[in-house]
Length: 224
Image (cartoon, rainbow, N blue to C red; front, side, top):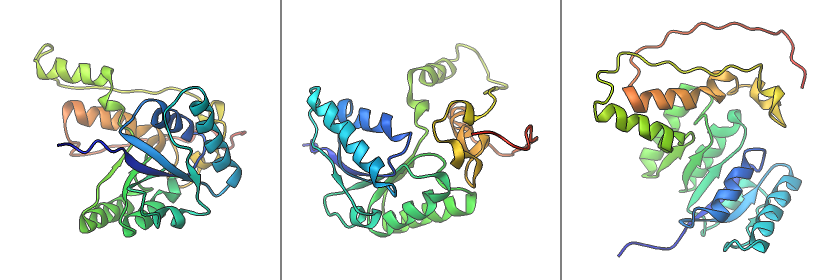
């Protein structure tokens, strides 16, 4: 008989992206349960807990998550099975590595790490520890890309000989409430938004065997 107990999750990093995770874990996905939260800025962790409390008051069936003093307290919590890494991109490697070393499975926001070397080390460590590691973007599992997948698989459009993706905007400072980290290591358009498009292309037409890139810096300074 299948195990029906929810998977217990600890959230590390309660910044801007945490809102949708808090909403979905609390209201939508009953297969997972948020055990606790942690952030370098305690007020953010407290705000995250308050958000969950408001969902509970509105009828959600979920426990009130605890607040960890630091990520190591979360890693040492025997109740936690999976660490949800929502820290800034340049912190992903260190947090995920420490979680794996403490025997926890990890789901991380994108990118998995700030460069290929770090990502490769994390994959090797997860394999060594026999732990699962996954990450955003999982949007390829959504209706749009899955419909495209079926269209291709069923041969409705014949042989796929090419594909193109584009995102056109001025920059994250025009819409993100706290965009500073996107201009640091692990940020930038390719590391922040690129994973969505690369993942979609790989899912639809296969593995990339070569890469060519052209870049340009449009602005010397940006105002946040």
